[in-house]
Amino acid sequence: MAYDDSVRLIWSLTSAGLATGTTLSANGNSGGYTASTPNNRSAVDLRRVDDIWLSVIAAGGAGTSLKAQLNLYDDQGNLFSLLASSGTTPILATPAITAAPGYAVVFGGKHGGGGGGNYLVASEWGQVAWTVTGTFTGVEIALYGR
View 1 (cartoon, rainbow, N blue to C red):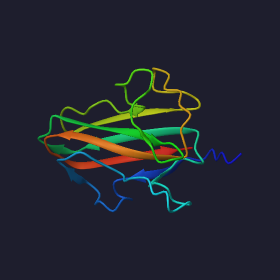
View 2: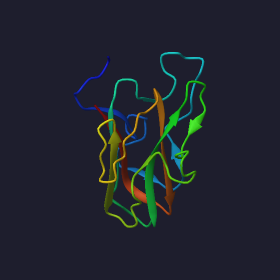
View 3: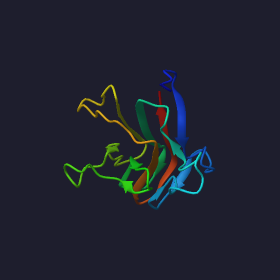
């Protein structure tokens, strides 16, 4: 088993090449699935984590909604962004920040979390996506795992 119980940063806006304190005014994500590169299928490598913590923070701006979510890829690169049981509920999503400054977190995984359970067995590869209405400044989105 490859489980590693130390916490580490899996993905962030900063590690994706966007400056610390990014301004967001459009929806986006961490990138797609690359089937031709077997050791790096997506920017979000979940192969060695059992538990996940996703956070989003905004220092300022005039936006009305900002949230982040974790999407998962199957072994063929098909993207799953919603729970099959509901068809509308994201797999793992932060609550929306509706005014800045603000922050939101969600956590889940093998050991549950987040008050509502959030038990999740993730696939090997994922994608962090965000939706934004308006403009938020000083934004950082981070995904941690252990």
